[in-house]
Image (cartoon, rainbow, N blue to C red; front, side, top):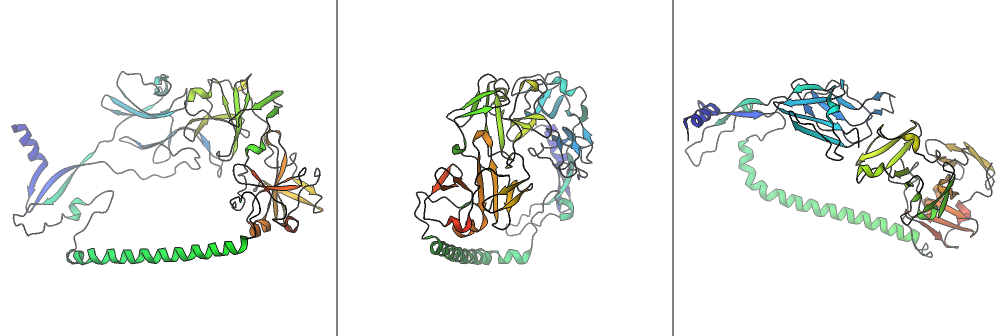
Length: 449
């Protein structure tokens, strides 16, 4: 070992009475955050970029807080809520930042050496123009902390003295403390605690088993006579308003798109396709909220495994999925005037009407905006009008019928004089004589007014 190595060891390891002082490298604690942006509805914002002055959090898209109506821009926000369009952290001749590619929208953590021109790893687009107005700051340095530890005791039977909490107290978590009484009881606790844990486990199993048996017995007593139709659909929960579903049964083989003035045809994957504009479109129940999505040739395929597109009717703009659940405004390089979209859906309304007169019950029912359904309080029926892709019909949810029979959304076929119920993937026909529909259910007869 060289004399230089010995001197470094002497600097990092010094004696002080009964203790040894060790120099420890510690990252500075995060600065407390206040007045932060609110209502962000995309992915969680990126990890911190830390400089000598601030801790920055990056938001990859602009958004509006629905509660306050405040618009927040895409970019960086420090611990005080101050906005910055772009921030670059300098580490000697090394640079680092987080940015969304202006070409393909991909959010990336960039790292490059001085003199290099950083580019997007997804599409290869040069990104040097992104940093023209960037705020350049030096990285925050780790600090050196002196920590006292006890000197080794030559006596093999002696327990080491715990380090002083005052000298080596942690920044981010609690450390173990030495308690002589607890140390003496550890052997006994090692036997007693497992026994207690096993006993509690069996008690919990017994309680759960009893509850399940009670529930199953109650279900069998009530439903033994509900066995006469081909498939027993799993009962659906109380209706999730705004979560209307569409199945393959809801789709016609062809659909006339008035916006285009021509027919579009269904493929084997349940998507409609317009060859002239190179666009696939379909209803996606996985979206929040469920909506029609589009894939345009020449745009969507530039985003790799992503590229789904949605039209925001309120903003009058297109969004595209640049990465998982990361929806951004369609980049300006694409011509939105060349795109098309379906008319705004009625969201369950019949021809946009805020109320409809139901002949079957002899009264008018109002549309509840918050529920996206019409509602009749006397029969406790929620119902809406399906008008997507040209296949039009009414869908019903009778609270009492669900409570008694366990059947949720219903659909009536006038030509068959039969009721159908949904089970997520399709509609199932309910056989005659199984349920007393006349006791709970009614259906629209003719066009409402």
